Image 1 (cartoon, rainbow, N blue to C red):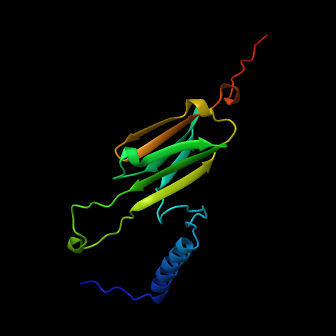
Image 2 (image 1 turned 180 degrees about the horizontal axis):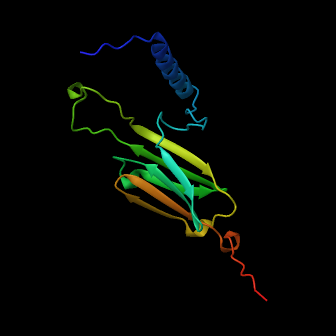
Image 3 (image 1 turned 180 degrees about the vertical axis):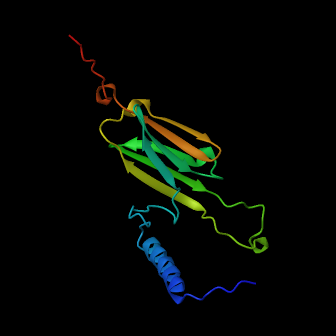
Amino acid sequence: MALVKYNPLRELRSMQEQMNKLLNVSWNHDVSGEDMKDGIWQPAVDIYETVDSIVIKAELPDVDQKDIDVRIEDNTLTLRGERRHEDEVKKENYHRIERYFGSFQRSFSLPATVDQEKVQAACDKGVLTITLPKKEETKPKQINIAVK
């Protein structure tokens, strides 16, 4: 059996991180500073840009598609939904519950370059992908140089 040197600072750092998370939740902010509206969890998202669009991917495992609402109002995309707890397993039969359940809401400000009429959303393997196409006039345009 290997001996591991005890490091009290690691324990203090871990405790400080847990306290920060607890205080952020109680003040209705997540660790990134984004406001939390409903519930105490928010799905993790990736946001990236391509030449033609902005893409938002949200992790929503065990969330039924009928419980997901995606809306755009006043240049703000709002992702709202609920992950329900399985009723078929009794609470006393669980050994550990680490996943969050309940309602969630995330909001993202959209740039003026997004064509809001052509937004698409699809869900595959628990990942919601929202594609926000750019307006034609905002896409980069290649200009050919004539050689004389």
